[in-house]
Image 1 (cartoon, rainbow, N blue to C red):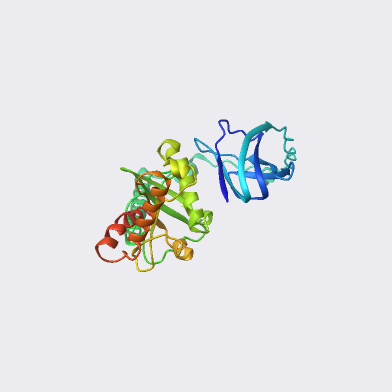
Image 2 (image 1 turned 60 degrees about the horizontal axis):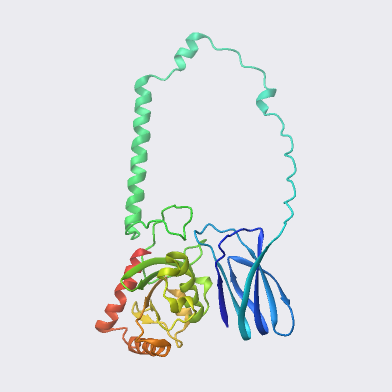
Length: 319
C-alpha cells in the first residue's frame, strides 16, 4: 500500500487534480480533503486518478489517499480547470400575510393623568436593576462552582482543529473514556520531536490500525508544524522512528506495537508520540526503533512506567 499526500500551490475548487500512477489491480481508499471522481485506465498498467478539491480553511491545505495494488508507483501530477454549472436559483419567497395588528382598530389615546400614573418611579427602576444584577452574579458563581466540582482544570487556547476560534473547556481524565454525546471522539496528542513539543488532535475515526494511526499522526504534523519540522522519514512514509504511547485500563503507559489490541487504543483519549534518534542509515533506524519498542514492552509499572506516564498524564490534563 502506498500513501500519497498532495499539497497544491493553489487550492481552487474549480480545478481537478489528475494523478498518474502505474501498477496492476490498483484501488484507491481513505481519501481525505478531496473527492475521488474516477479512475481511468490507460493500458494494462497505467491509471489516471482524478480528484475534486473540497473547501479548506487551512493555511497550507493538502489532501491524501491510499493506493493499494501490485507495484504502485507515482508517475506525474497535473490539474485542469473545470467549468461547473451554477446552482439553480432559489425560488422567490412567498408573500407573507400582514400581521394581525393591521386588522385591529387603533387604540384610543390615553389622557395625560393616566400616562403619568403608569410611569415607573426611579426608586423602583433602580431596585429592579439591582435585583437583575444580583441574579446574574449568583448564576455566574453557581456555574463556576459546578465547573470546579466536575474537575475542570484550565481552559485550552483555540487550535487549528477549532477554526471558529472559540475556547473550549476540556473534560478531566477519569476511568471513563467515552466521548461526549453528540461530539466526534478525538485523540489529544502530545508530539515530542527533538527538544520541541507540540499539541494536536485527530479524530479516532481516522484510523483503524496502528499503521493508519501513524499515517494520520504524520499528516497532522505536516498540517500543524509544516514540512520543515516534520521528520523526513515520516514524510517518506517510514515510521520506524515513531513511538506511540497510550494509557491502558489500569492507567499505565503502554507502547503501541503490532500485538496491541487497537480497540484498547481507541478507548483512550490521550496519546504521546515521540521520535527516537536513529544510529545512522535506514537499517539502523529500524533496528533502533525495534530496540526502543522492545525496551518499552513490560515497562508499564515501576519507575520506567512512571516516566512514560508523565507526558500522557500531561495530555490528560490538557483534555
